[in-house]
Length: 205
Image (cartoon, rainbow, N blue to C red):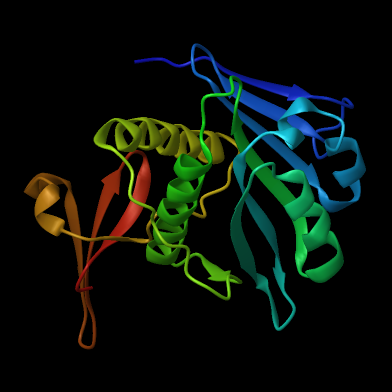
């Protein structure tokens, strides 16, 4: 089914402060380059609980991305701290709710879920010194967090950011036989599938 996604360039620049939303959902995303942190301080989303991702290049390998995942209630003091104490990041992505319903506990659970996805995806070098832990939450809260997480994944991909997308499919039996491609040579054997318009290497290749 189709989804309406709104991307708003606050200063009219494609690489400046931007917001992104999905129609009929409460999720609200803000993306900005590090020099625009001061402009992020004024929007209401800066004073709400939320999760955030800091992205930058690895100083030892500019082709590799470094990622830090965090949460805050609100997020702004945490981002101000990272502007002083973390050198690597050049871009920040913040997700909060348009209403005030997202709780501190849900945000911490969301942080742990995003961290787990990023680690499994293996597309970035994670800068987190400690692994975020999942708090105990109700089944209702888990269902809401799950919807929020799916929305975050969709919005990140819409922005061309694939940091949560796995490189390798965990189970190849999820793919029908006619959609699997094989490569055989003397020293290599690999299987690949086209899933959601992406080329995915299967486990065991």
